[in-house]
Length: 508
Image (tube, rainbow, N blue to C red; front, top):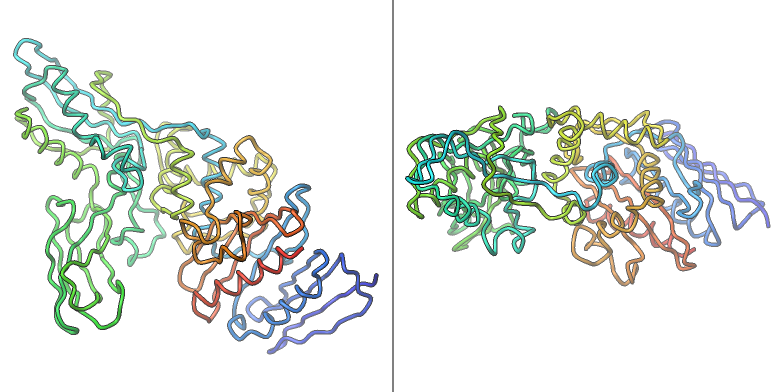
């Protein structure tokens, strides 16, 4: 068998020369994309070497990649050996495949059965005869990312957790609270949003920040009604009702389908502006947005439930980021297991859950949850596992920030580590499959049947990335990361290009 070597050199356009001597077991491809003058791809693959060569031949002439950055790393899952990667490995924007870095570290550090705890406590003294609590009633947050989450309705909402709290307060004999109702979110820093998130994201549901006392995915819905195209849309209500919220509505109806709106506003600011368009002639159209102050909403809801059950509160509702822990525990609400939370996080790409995990690792290690400390703990964890973290730049846990940069090799090295750990099966099950529920539904189940593809996706404007595990037709398992930045085609077109690449890989 001979060797095939393709040298693809960029000088305005990309040309190539081929040396014959084809070895069907080894293929080396040298790529140079215009945005990175000397980006090199080396690859070694199996019996479909010529097909992969033809695939890359299409990519090199694709106008969509003329100014793009392309990063690839593929490992053999059994041996951990590299069979294909771009050289040098360039740090690129990962978008949500950064959740692999965060969730795998959290799973290893905390364990799959870890659960978050929210407590109802009280300060002062309780007169058992009169039922008067001469002190404060306290909601003590424990960093639960899923408290009241729409993803865990059966766990929290079928028998509503606030109703359970009120019942426990009644069983304690409390009929009157002379002090305040305090929402204590002190396990985490007061700053919910990482420094580098962009303004447009903050008011929208996917830009909800992590809080020591999060609630309902830190999200609310704005219900609108629209008339004919070009006319103003009307706000009907919000669900739930958010105390003090003021919304400036600039939404109009449009003949264009889908939600074309953005909600603008920052944490702890009760003012919101909503701009854009929604489909015309809708009686109800729902838009999701991020809560300004999650602990305040939770405390107000508990206050209302107390009143409905004839428990008097003399004081006011307050929130604090200074610990009010008393040791006088009335009841506890435990979260689903970490493995369940991570499965939802990776299937649905929930930024909030990832940001919680980042802060919570800092809380576990230092007693106070912060994004900056959590990032350093994650980076150090992987460094201590033998992964070269040079070029790994993390500014959040979820990948929403464009200041994040990471190489495909970082991702495959982490996946390779977790694949050989005790948590391998739990982590793999957290990744979506082609055509199934979650963010990988855009890939064809027919092309990747029986769960042969499990991967995390990552997307934002001009970014599309996928990383995970792929079983080939010869039953070989591959670990892969594919990262595209600054392509000029549409997202569906980028998805199709990556899907075709994975199909070629699976043909081994």
